Image (tube, helix red, strand yellow):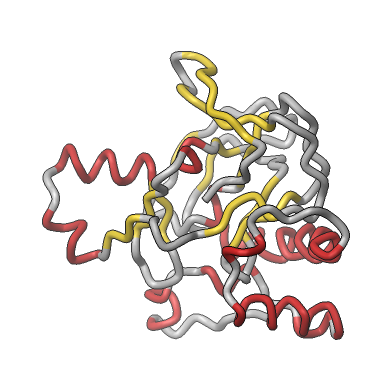
Length: 205
């Protein structure tokens, strides 16, 4: 579920739609939680779909650590990538604002965390634009992502959290462990697809 203080808006023929803040969203706010209504498409089920349906699933989904494609039931699926994004996925299974987001500002994300199976060209407006996101971005950038997330997470306890009721007790306990001891931080690398682990790649904490 996407944060309630957001709306969907058409941008242009190239980008299509995007998601925009309707109120101030401070750093540390949970902006998306995978809830019980999200559609989960296993690798086996994905293979059974037609080519057209596979293309639609690819466009509107992200791949979780199990290798499942997750399609949001609400307009969270319209959040666009930016190489200088203002929200980011965490190792706790939700997305968080990594800086203050102003009313009317587009909500943007880091697609490199989404377990891409192939690279894709991007043209975000940021001067930091990488021009392309690719599967190897996880290994190249996860330490930078972790720094941004570690800086944002303490705000979790300082701001309003409309989506907090959707977080599991386990996640809340993990967050409290980090609050008490920053060494208990759960790296975003934990979101890397399970298939990578089965190939013997190490999980960095």
